[in-house]
Image (cartoon, rainbow over all chains, first blue to last red; front, side):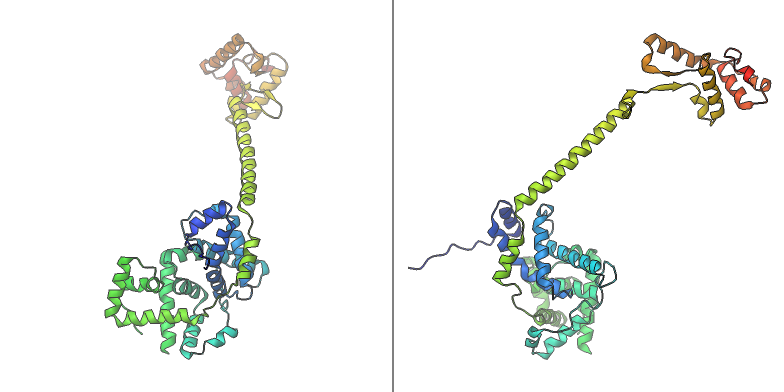
Length: 184
Length: 208
């Protein structure tokens, strides 16, 4: 007779945060499991593929260390993206690798494809990827947050420290550029 | 590939792609794309964008454990922050309290005593007449200052304070004279004497 495992209850992020605050470390594990991949994907899309894991870890440590500042007005994932983005900007300023500016600069995209990219055998997919990579840094960031991560314009505005209207404009301009690239 | 003129639907396409539309939005988008070739093509493009990004798990279970191990416990973080906040708040409140008390009581907190001082000549100060004020203090130093007081109020009795206040009122009631012409060599001193009286009473005249 096999062991019947208890049903997996899918708690919301806020519920998991409350459970962690009550001393349940398993809740922290669940939160990390839920958001680690999207977070790594996000920081990678900003050109931090090499240090993505370290950034992801730093982001979680910062987030849990300041969890009282999270009031649930935005989603937990949006909040994580905001922290990660600030970490990247702070790191770049500190290292002086790029000019000190709040905006993510051109060339942030990773152009050296790793082994996983070789799996993208489909030429059409490669063209789509190239089209996205050809976008400006700001457009690409907004476009991928909207399309790849599925964030709303309001959430994207919070992450990139802009307005909802501006992010909508960036998104549609980016989409137009991708279409034009693929129509060439 | 053209853009559909229905921007509202186009805005919703990524939401629809991720299955995050509510029931009303879901039905609206589904109904629209059934008849719109542009939006159907755009939805496929968005899907291909997602598929063009490598889909794999970046983070292994070991990585998850490593990250969780680096996260501080909530209580330690919370208590430290709360203690810091409490200390900062206590210092701030104490500072505000001491300052407010000092201002309300007019206490020189550095000397620890009341220093409410009345200088009759300060009326001249307001006109920038520091010279005349100097003369008044000079007369005061000789002990013959009629109507000019530089005193510590706390050392006076109630009756003395009342007398002093009456004297101050009398200054304002003095009739205006042409004393300036008698002391035209020093208009500022004349103005001062005009304010306090004839000048003979306090023996200042001979100084001029």
